[in-house]
Length: 229
Image (cartoon, rainbow, N blue to C red):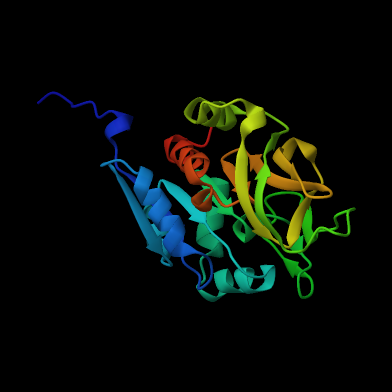
């Protein structure tokens, strides 16, 4: 019997959204579901076995660095995430505090160790213009600092000049990165704010793709299409 060649395009993708008791899971799930194709399954899970079966992993985050990292510890998924993302190189997206947890430490309500995938620490926003309120809430322009394959594919879907990108932010803390090669996009809020980081198969956004209308949906679609390279 001849062997059948199965196209990678038709292979089932499983996008796991990690549920650790915090985060805007419903809006993230709805946004991913809106752009998903027939051969793509969007799953909310807290189970290591689901993470193991996943093709893509999403870590949302709303709240404090402390509550989010402790939430991950409580459901005992950090080792599974490390194994599948850091070693098996599955595409990973961290959103808001989900991005901040990629840092080495977070200083909100004390000092807490992060996942340590991105060199840098999370600390309070420090806008030079003292009239700017914290938390930073609203729409801000995205400034591309470094183009990689992911950004090139995203721009093709977005079909806009890089100076027309605008996304939605809600946060009081910033990831102050140590290595600027990890900084992909920034925004300005009385200071440079880290808007997107990337390192190999790992990306993170301070902005909320699920709340950023068509730009966010195109970003999510780009992530699902991405193989991590």
